[in-house]
Length: 283
Image (cartoon, rainbow, N blue to C red; front, side, top):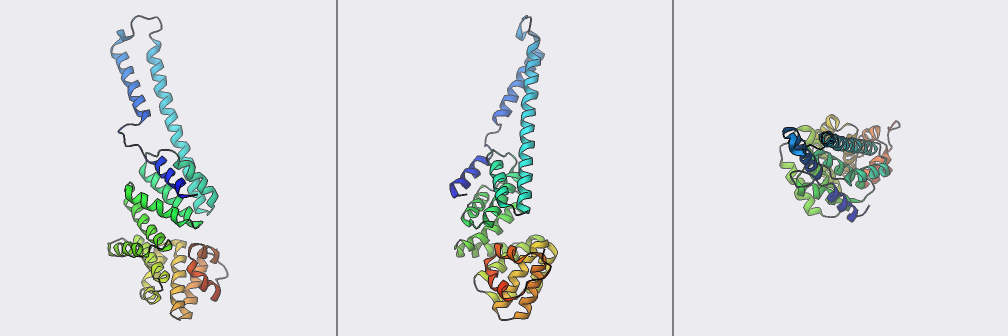
């Protein structure tokens, strides 16, 4: 997928700014007609088939509502299948489903933001970081998501900026995130981001200064994704010539995720993977 495709999906999924959409306007008009017919029976005169008009208007309203509900159910199924594909790392299926979903105007802002974040993750997985960056920047510019989604967007954007060479912008954003008071589950994400910055920029000593605190945050709040944190800690310890700690963290990381999955996310772990053995029973 290229940048024009990403821009098209962002635009096509954006909800309309009008107070009422076309379907709502049609439904409102039919309601007004039906109300007029019921309150003023003479409105349709004495035509022999005049009694059919109110029933016809009512049926049209029911059909319109039913079509709208069916469309929403279909899109909900498409999104659920696409998000499941993301979880299973089935990137082509995920991209196909998210593209289908985002081709429509999505009035539910959190659902649209969730789909865009999933698409950005899919693009990152195939190393299209410029596409991910465009999505994150659009979400922040629009500011049409809940607070947790916006936080995740900022964290992901900072990591992407590091990968696309905008180091100064990335560091500024990371420093702002570090200054914010956050609950521990969100703090764990920021600590993983800070650790990635330190390893990426060759600041390994800084990366190990809070190793115990970071390990505990990763363990408690990140599930199997804690493996990424352990892997980066292994890289930091390896770079300051502390192989015993590096080996132990790499074992912890590969107990949770296979080395290939860790390397797919962080190229910075290649040296660690070549030097230290992985756990035998990685999932």
